[in-house]
Image (cartoon, rainbow, N blue to C red; front, side, top):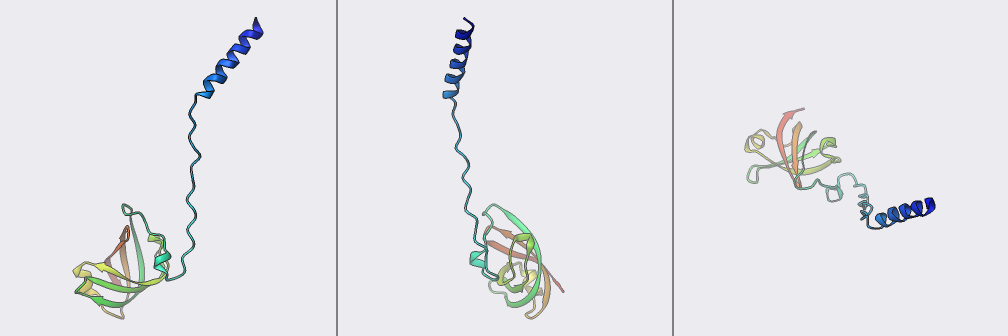
Length: 124
């Protein structure tokens, strides 16, 4: 009788386990290839909803008041995960008015998805 009771309990537990749903193992995304220095196309960008801020230093190579942008040849910006490169940034009219080609600066940048904006510049 004891054996029948143990066998029945084991069978009940086994059957109960058969009805359990299992979740599939998470799939890992493939690792991104490292970007070459100055290669913005190969640099992973943040999702559109992510906002990052950072500070960098560099030299202003172009000021375009018509488009409200400044182009900066800058070093790495760890706060946003960028390597050294030359790129154009949107900037507020007050920032564009202060910018001078050839000037060495420190600057603050905010990145929202694929959009980047210089929010402040200071002489270096």
